[in-house]
Length: 513
Image (cartoon, rainbow, N blue to C red):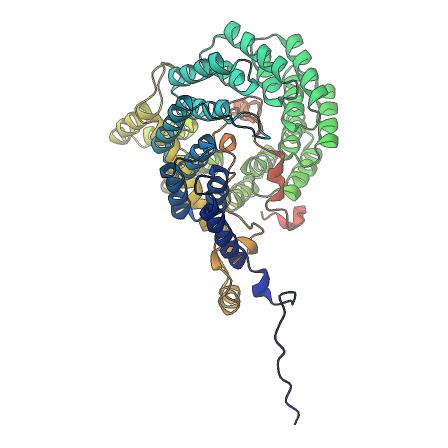
């Protein structure tokens, strides 16, 4: 018998270990360390190094890299502090992120360094990050101080002007907000969020002609920004101009075919008109682009409820939680349904889980309060009232005592739930991963279609954008017909979200009832 010796494989062979993400990460780490050895004060290298580790889930190591950069007194110190804050924010450590950003601003204000970047001067960008952090912590006065101080130093920076405008919107000061938003738009005609926020503000104030003009202007300069089309169409829908709204939705989808909330919002329009077949078709289009958005499952469930298919509605809500375990309204709606059919314990458990995931979702408190009142649990109501008072406050200038902690817990729970849903590697696949010396965490992400952690590491995306007629479809018009709660209005995040969870094509047969 002839014995065939195995040839030595070249680096260009098909050996899976050559293409292992873990191997590439190891090589990248070596290269970054060599670069730091050549220039120990090169801030951009530290920032890229730490950001890569953060994306791969190596949070503790990323924190160490940024700490080294701070200790080395690097050049481009703003990018270092910016990256350092992202590490803490990704873990839900709001106070730590705030401290880092403030220290970064203090040091950049003391330095005279000149920073050139493709994203323009990073100094105002650091101020913007801190301002948005404070705004989302319900510390409006602190956010105002950050934004206005930065505007004095850096002038007409569109991002800073928008941030200051959002503070005034939060305080109900439309005149001041209008002036800031106008300056923001003039400073950068392609700043889609500025057009969106200004248009929504005018629409809420009843200035529909002005809002229409602003949405038209935003679409002219940013035709591929799906949230603008959605906001414009939603306003026309609320005004009863259903044909106009449908045309806007259709044109928006033509321009931004992967912007899932457009399909969701159009489905809501068809649902209000009783066009169940059209609504189902749009929801299926939405699911085929992204099954991991809870709002899509919420609309799908509402379609079934409107047709008195309560079993189908419950099934869709449960499927929605499987695909998006971080979506608080799914917990709330499923719990409300279970309470109505007498399943109090499971309903209470779902509401409590929802509050752990998103302590800032007010309808959860309302639903839980109704549940406890229905069973005469006065002690439970008193405890719930204290919990709500610690998170919410009627005075916008005085942040609730636990507002930052609540937001931090929300981020932490999203991370935990994402890891549970994305990092379960089948036993056989795990065995192959070990045999081929592939990092099992990375392999698990690959198995779920995601090579990096399920977190958007752009700082402004981590900080929730309080815009309006938002990227998360507003279901208030539907739910209010049934005595529900007014939905929250969030701003645009990214059209890139459609990349997740679109591996399988969905038909009505695939949706379990």
